[in-house]
Figure 1 (cartoon, rainbow, N blue to C red):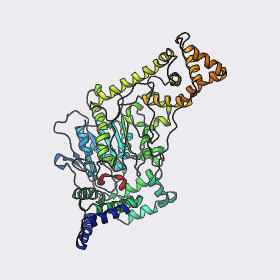
Figure 2 (tube, helix red, strand yellow; figure 1 turned 180 degrees about the horizontal axis):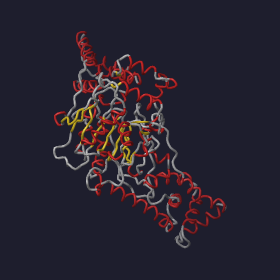
Figure 3 (cartoon, one colour; figure 1 turned 90 degrees about the vertical axis):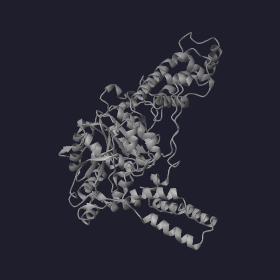
Figure 4 (cartoon, rainbow, N blue to C red; figure 1 turned 30 degrees about the horizontal axis):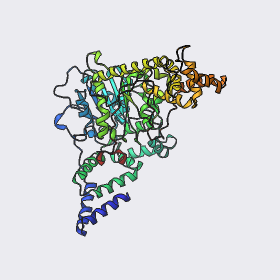
Length: 576
């Protein structure tokens, strides 16, 4: 904040601003902060409305040459008092167009309509009925992509109607509302102590049964009030940068323009999802049935933001632990962004969504051989993964290729990944034999041999091998003698060259036999121990050790940070 003020006055002095020009700056600044208009859909000319209901419209953005037999993809935008156009935010920031250009050529989006007196009593059952009609209109089966509130809505629908959902993707969508660092839940414990809904019911009652979008907007601002002030002062500093002012105006038109939500629906969300956490507990009743997440068996894509203070990553990852989808059919993406950046930042749209849409598109063709066998899975290194929480799943989940690998089809990338995984496992199996023929190997030979003996089965991933090797290296003795003794123990009799004999003899003389027999098992035990799950408070990414016994995989291109080449209008750290 202080830096922005200093920057403004420094600029004013450098351009020799007069009192009149300062007044002009303040006037333009005030207009830029307060003048708002309805946010447009950036590619509206390339779409058509193919369905309309009291609660929503269905916009079709399908490519002119879209394959008619491809299973369509439907995006469910956030529904938190803002316009749905965030999924088509700007010419170069459109989640819809990224999907269309990366495999999902038949792509549509819901547009939530603001609540009126006619729709104020709409509830969760009405939204389920709406999605059923959409699926039936599009052929009976769809891919669902749910952002934030659209994510848990899509999840509930997939659990109740699994036959209508081909694949499911959620981004920044809370499934377990109480894990991670649940900032919103912490606020609710203050506003609704012991589950008392009086505060929220009075807000709906005071507005004739609807919840104004401004109510939610003010709540988001209250989560990070310093960011709201900082963003306003940054605008003042950049009032003479026309591009900056335009980006700011575009974002603020979307962020500040609000629409109402049906009061009945809003109260249901607060009580059953945010307070009771009924979805993850298996206690949620919708359409007269209990929502059971185990009924979800379709391919699953999860996406979270590393700095998302609205929906911490753990709340998104949680879905993987409750569905029946096989682990290799669960893909995860972790964006270097906050909440809103998941849907419209350059980094998310250029790095993560193309991977999701490409694999989703491959799953949507009428030919099963196009299906990727393994989905790309690269969760944030700062969050506990389902494999860290349940190590026994690791052997059943081959690691997928890096998100930004060569521009191949999704199916090709998956096949390449599977081949690389098998190659890595083969190399691990061969490692002990290779080590046995090299008694004069470098100092690291013994820990490597110990790690190889305790290696995972064939399906173990290179990443897992790296963790095991690093653990074994730390646990193995550092002196040369125990290493030589361990190497001698691991090698078949007579396989070591004569040059190793003096070293082995020295080891036997210098180290008691009891100590020698404990060295290798210690390394094996350490290698077999899974890495402890990290907590969400560990915000800094941890650099994992490189594997020493598996072939080197293609390096993932380093994605730019959320701040590099990113206009302030898309930096979600500055907005709730």
